[in-house]
Structures are given as structure tokens and as C-alpha cells.
Image 1 (cartoon, helix red, strand yellow):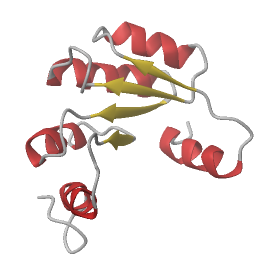
Image 2 (spheres, helix red, strand yellow):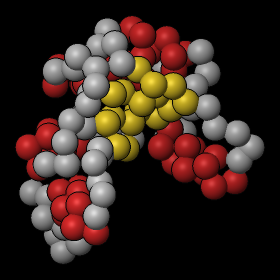
Image 3 (cartoon, helix red, strand yellow):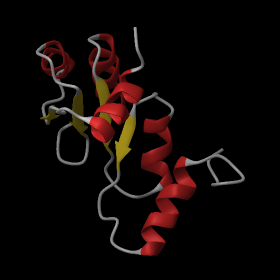
Image 4 (spheres, helix red, strand yellow):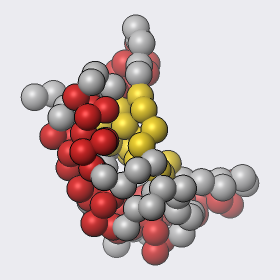
Length: 120
């Protein structure tokens, strides 16, 4: 099976069309169904939805198992929220409230291993 994240990047770059969905309900079967219905990615909204870490992991696993890319929007641009989600292996994360160059740098530091960042 092709890597869903790589396929998504290629489709964003070259087309023809990318379809994704926004999952706000923490039941992983909903995110899985979206992936099974042909979405290229499912955006798991842990910022606004009622997700705990267990539900995020279950949703990532369900989406990836159905062949789509799993993106997770974390609660906050903070290491304590970003690192645990990255450890779950999503295909990408969405970080809210990135409004300045300093916010971008903080997010990058949390996501990248040294020497590019500070992720442990």
C-alpha cells in the first residue's frame, strides 16, 4: 500500500483533485467511514472536538487503516500538546493560532528533531 501522506503531498502538488473531511466527533468509526468513502485525508479536530489522547490515537489508526491520510489539529501551539500527538504517527498536524514568525518557529522547534528543531 502506498504511503497516504506521500500520495496526499503529490496530489496537492500535481492534482487532479484532493478531497478531505473534518471529523469533530471522537468516535473513530466516523473518521474511518470518511476514509472508506474515498476522502484523501481526514482532519481530526482535537482543538474543537471532544478528543482525549486515546480517541486521537484510535482515529489516526482507523483513518490510516482505511487508506487515507490522518491529520490532527492539536489544541494549542505548545510542546505539551504537540509532542504526544506526533508520537502517535499522524500524517500531519495542524497547529492553531500561529500568528507570528515566533509562533511558526515554536511550532517548527516542537515538530523537528535536532539540529533543525528541539523535539526529543
